Length: 198
Image (cartoon, rainbow, N blue to C red; front, side):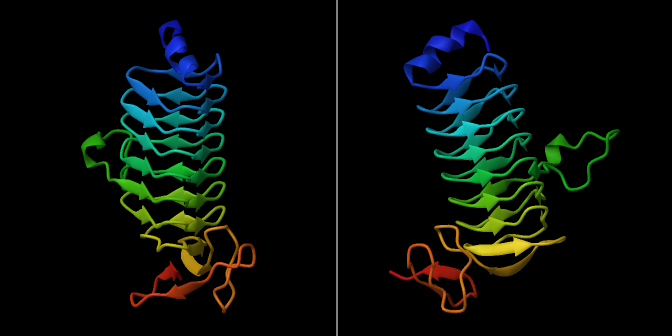
């Protein structure tokens, strides 16, 4: 980390390990922790109270909301956006083009990937670019997401398919659609997705 950035981050309670690299310009919110060997490239905005794990690469020009947890060995490329409260498990993969070739430059073909509020992405899952993960969706470890994922959906497999519903609290819902953790209730909407009651 360059010395000239340290006072700016310290004043906001940002913790950056000495082995991390922070390019300029970068905005990092109060209370965020950046761990060993992470690299945040220029043009990125990281929200408050995030945890950026070891060997994470973010950017360039990536937005991460507040209260996100990005576990070790995750790369968030240009075109990826995380809303608030997103969890990315270890070694989760985000692609940025659909048909990469080492010999052919395709950076102008990057597609946007939006991860909506409260979504969870399990370890070693792959998110193919150009899709949206709905609010509080839950991507099982090792799944390969090739389509949009509805809000509160639990998806698993290769390619990922919906196998159930998850509550905002992170519990799998039964047929009654009542969360066993906090008692919150859900219902299916007219388009077949899930929504909270009340």
